[in-house]
Length: 173
Image (cartoon, rainbow, N blue to C red; front, side, top):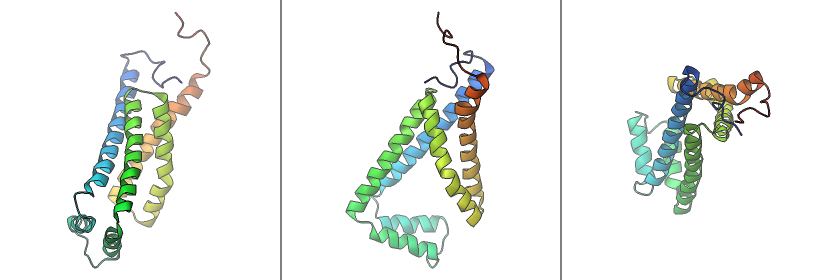
């Protein structure tokens, strides 16, 4: 499967711009993987109830609020088995993000497909969140994800259709 930049002249402005965009998305995916993995692993060194309380305090959310009660109850219910399951899920999620980041950094077509599909999966959830409550954070997350999905759609679907089929002798020396 050809990468979306294989047909571009190396060093051209368009080539550099696409590589830079792919690497920016790759760094974002790497950061997401590291954050999820660090959060899950840190639950073994920090009591979940203490972490939930500190989180609520940091966000200046009153412990009397419904969300605070819900979060604190969930933290109290975390058992050792559930922590292992949470950590395993975080490892799988992070592994996918790390593989995607590596593939995007190297401009691999399979990674572009993963970015397109995984980003598109989140869009309905993000739209629902915005319909429920509009905040600057939700809008920013939605717009960044939408931009990534649109860029990957452009690379994987629009560009190949625009250029047409590749001749059989193309690239043969």
